[in-house]
Image (tube, rainbow over all chains, first blue to last red; front, side, top):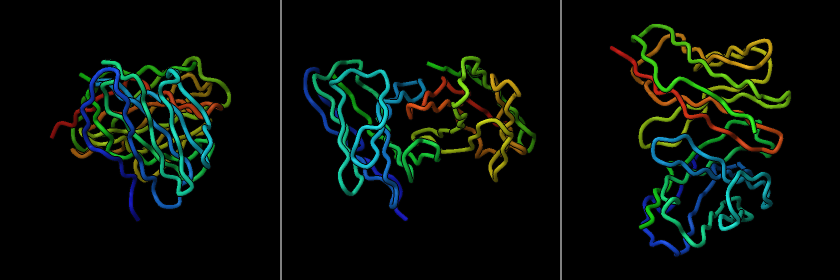
Length: 114
Length: 109
């Protein structure tokens, strides 16, 4: 069974640019959640996708957007990057919507904005 | 929004029990309490979760106060592999997971 994978592992972008991060969920999981983890902090919930629809959102501005595809993989897009967007971005999948199940996290994508 | 409060760090001797506390005084009746742990350079790993009753699994036990305003994660015999940051999380009906700042657990051989 393949776990949650994320790409790329590391990324460096310039302020004002746009970035797309990708996540492949664990086999059989139809729910994907995205988190932002700043250095030394706990993960902050960005949003969750269930069966290709947004299913909950944290306190992040609209320039953070996402997609979920029919195979349940997902993308996180961030427009107009700011220096404070530098963080580890984590993706987690779970077997069904509602968040009652355990989430399986990927290793994350480290984004640096200069 | 409900929040959790945890001590920044704790230490335990190897093979001794560890009790990791969490306060969540603004928890609502439908919030689930989840615990995850994170090792360096890895994503968080699920430990346990519960709603009202105490819960046990192969990794740990979760003791939930009767008023649900606090909970305690119990590792029965700490090993060196248990050294990690432990997060107490509330999951609300909006499918939002709120991580606390976490407790960094050091296990002393």
